Image 1 (spheres, rainbow, N blue to C red):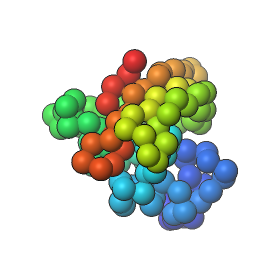
Image 2 (cartoon, rainbow, N blue to C red; image 1 turned 30 degrees about the horizontal axis):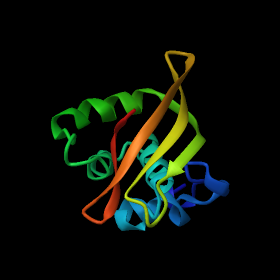
Image 3 (cartoon, one colour; image 1 turned 90 degrees about the horizontal axis):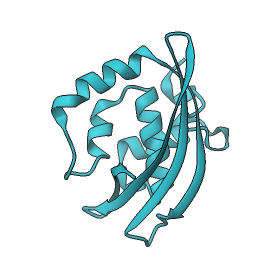
Image 4 (cartoon, rainbow, N blue to C red; image 1 turned 30 degrees about the vertical axis):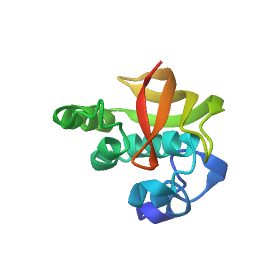
Amino acid sequence: MSLNEIICPCGRNNNLYKDCCYLVHTNIHNALSAEDLMRSRYSAFVLCNGDYLLLSHSIQYRDPSNIHNTIRWSRSVAWNRLEIISLVAGLENDLEGIVEFKAFFKEKNKIKCIHEKSLFIRENSHWVYLDAL
């Protein structure tokens, strides 16, 4: 099965990947909100798309030297699901937004969760991840 035939890892409305995060992975300007960018970053972790993870991270904190370790870790876990908890601003005409989420994964036979409030900003006319709050 090709990537275009799978359900998108981000879980939005059971959309196919080709109709969801793929559109953002191939053109970051298709992320119209902070939530869109958050979902696309989660899918990039699941799919081990390091290039996109760098592109979608603010230039202020982007660290190309660490992406290899990030992708190695991402491949070592089994991603389960993304749960969006809350959104503050981050809509199409906003300059920043906050997305609180939980990302569930299995590591060494234990279910774990990343629970974070993330700050997203507009940088070079598109959304990027800035930092955890």
